[in-house]
Amino acid sequence: MQVSWWVELAVRSGCLDDFEKLTGEMVNSTKAERGVLAYQRFISDDQQTVYVHERYEDSDAAVAHLRAFAAIFGERYASVVNRKRFVVFGEPSDELRTILDRYGATYHRPFGRFPYWG
Image (cartoon, rainbow, N blue to C red; front, side, top):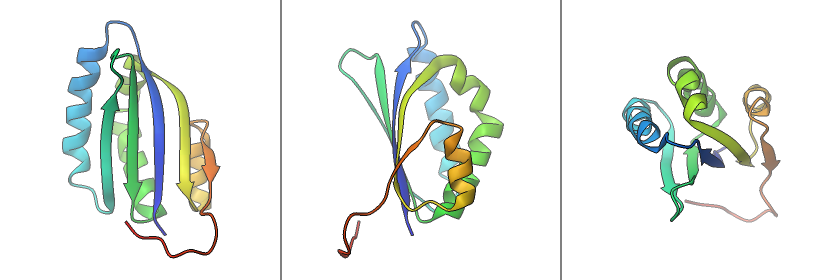
């Protein structure tokens, strides 16, 4: 089952250029990963807040991504942004939830028994 998240980040003062460079590196690294369906970033008009949207074909793909992210980019990422909100959609595996809990994630499961696509 697919899993996705939306993350709201506050860019630390004076760090926007560094975060943009880091984001480029993260995008290039993620292109080589299996199971990444969406990997998008959006910025507020005042350039203070970045919104992240990521979607994975299953929990295993998300776990693999997060492990690679933490090992390669985690420290630099934490030095340029503060995580304000981390909202997860779907039904992540226990293993994925354990990782996401470290980020203060909140969880939202599918509503109803409707067929979903996209």
